[in-house]
Figure 1 (cartoon, rainbow, N blue to C red):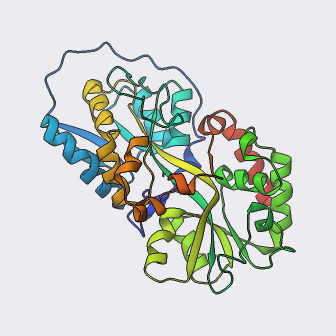
Figure 2 (cartoon, one colour):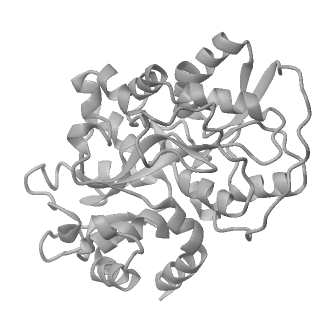
Length: 362
């Protein structure tokens, strides 16, 4: 789950989430299997390196996951800067893997898996019986749930008269006002297709003709954003009346009294994943860390630190009503949401990116 409260190469420790500027590079590279080197018997490592998005996400990881793992194993976790698809690909293909397990956007994880650059997840070590069905994958694991949501400036709309769904968001005649969208194909095309009437139960493959038709409708009333901080500020500052943003970017400003509100209705779930690059030297310990990250108590601790939902369903029972209310995938907030199909973007991303970028120039 990767630009807002969490992810941020341009300030990932920002308001609380910095998430997906990094996806722009995920289409780089071509598929190709990589053969790992033979396993070598190793002593227990003193440290393990875990690249991540930094900022508030890394702090939450430390409290919820890294410190419990160190207490259990004695292995100290060292953070490192976020590694995007291209960097992981280069590291693996050059037999230069010097990290153990890394935090990455789920669409990038799916792309790396498709390229054959990841170790398979060991489900003898990791119990997936209590995980939501979307979380466990063959070569990557979802570890939290964030949301691409509709938000509005409270000077322009309130909870009753704001666009009731994506259909009204993409209809300037139904709701007047300046809109904002992320200037990237993933997530933006999903909500555009939903705005055109594509059902969330059958959102993939995305009806691209329908999605671009909706974008055409708002082109004259549209402001683009390219970072989570910018997306939030456009709405908070009143430069746009209603727009898209990651929930972590507007949670804290809303709590602090800024003129912004948002809804989880019809949200698109976007996630952080953990992956183990092929050839990782401490693969066994990496699997053990992943198991610690999926423990219900540790997942609940994480969700208390940041407004991202757990993937272990038993964690919800450990959270208060107030804590559940701020999480995208809590029972009360998940009735109309849909998970992004990460594998769709891994397979079709380059072609869809090309069409989206051509539309921007048209």
